[in-house]
Length: 552
Image 1 (tube, rainbow, N blue to C red):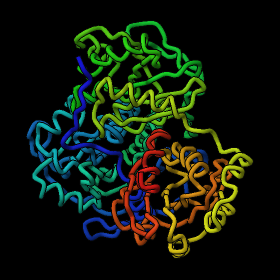
Image 2: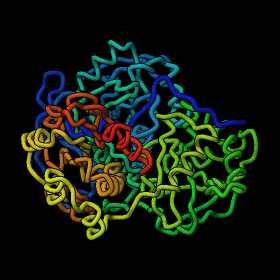
Image 3: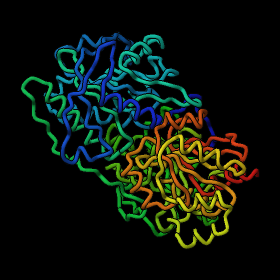
Image 4: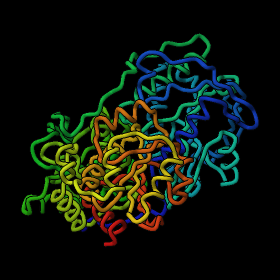
């Protein structure tokens, strides 16, 4: 059976990083909810939690929680007021989400479990944040695949009703290029119905139990008697297991699977709840065809990795695999900690990663947003990525030799390689001064995992094309020290200009959804293409440079 390419009508993309930052900045200053000013307590978090970028320590709020009455997954009308006397953990979740929302849902359940019997005094609520999937069937389907049908109320209503609630809680919801963006917000509400804290979920599988503990501790603080939290996790950063690390994990059905360097390998990350939005059973079965061809055509072998850290139960994967049309010819590894998904840069599910023999990621592919590839298309992508692997950190001497003799304006850029310059006006002036040369402008941030992943590709391309094409960086919404440290460790042959995302839109007003974004500007100063998201292989970036900077 072929692996069909299928586009979902309503695709889920991880929320725009700029949206997150805008909301977070507002949360730590002054937030207006339902016309009431909610002020931060000003308390500072100390210790490892303050230094963990994968955890939001929460922003203290002080105002009555805006009321609402919506229908749950059974069609029953539920009001916020009916839970007076309980602590409410309220999340805004996309009912078709395959990125942040499952992490949030899992953390909510873990928080309640960590409170033991006192968890009966905590109510879990979700409110749908997908404007195109608002039916009771939609919220019930999400609840079913995540094992939440009897564990929470997932609320929805008419679009007009939902918009009123989103507005009251300052939740940004948008459809951008057919994909759902929403603020990944989670609120705690005290037994008197007052907002206590706001949290923003980060994209880290390994940090989910830590977020659960944070929520449990906050709920215990709000409950009478302050019950004990049955967890003592550290809030230190949990490092991912990168493809360069050798590790052995359990295999579905028994035994173990070894992961790590040695030979090129193809990995498919998935979870059983993907079946809500894609035909994952059929496609896993179809991938048997790839594995068979891999043996005869010298292609990297395939291993599937179940993201067990966010499965609804230990029984979810065995039940799922028993229902497959045929036994799988490739192993299914179990990532119980989330560290493998984090280390391999997984941002959505299902998600393909091709890794070199040395443990370098050669290619990413987001199936959830781009659809399943046919076997022929998958094999072509794998071969292309293997044929043109990304280069390592640029060798300074080799780069200088390659760029020697560049025209004056481009040589001036190379002389400022790795420098962090100031401001949108300076970048706009630099772009004007480069009239006559095509420009590749990359918007990035040191805090942005996809930006970090593609930076080596930009370094390689700028060295090879830098005698004909001007490369520039725009460091967006970043800490100056972090940005300079990152550039010191990831050398490129061009400077970056530091600014906010809003400032960058004055230069590039169209098509910016977040970071990374790469903008191609022709010699006349006209924007000819905007590539949103990470470049997954050097071949893809090369193709765009050839097409949009060098005219094919």
